[in-house]
Each structure stands twice: as structure tokens, then as C-alpha cells.
Image (cartoon, one colour):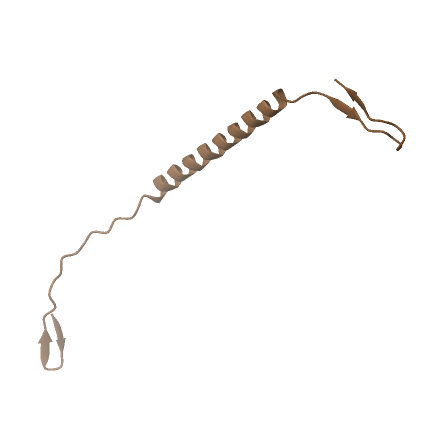
Length: 76
């Protein structure tokens, strides 16, 4: 009850809601795990791509001429 001047105002009691805090620690660790997994997957994919590129390369070297008169030599 709130009393002011010659009047008394009765404030109704409202239902109170229980507010719980989010479990930020759990959410952080879930996000951290997901990001770490994504980074590892990307690194694995890059490594696999690089290995495939290296394995399928034609290993031939071209020796460039030192003057305009020479033709390039190719070794295989």
C-alpha cells in the first residue's frame, strides 16, 4: 500500500517471474569447440589439397636462356 496525502493507493501484487541467467560458460565452450573443429577441418582440407597437387605435378624443369640467342632446354 502506498500512502500519499489524503489518499491510499493499493498497488496490486503481480506475479513475479524467475529470471535465470544463461549458462555463458557452457555456451562459450560449445562455440569454442565448434570453431576449433571448423579450423581443423579447413586445415585438413588444405593439407589434402596441397598433397594431391604435389603428387599430380608433372616434374619437368625448364632452364631459361641467359641470352636471346639460346633456346630453353627442358629436362624430364
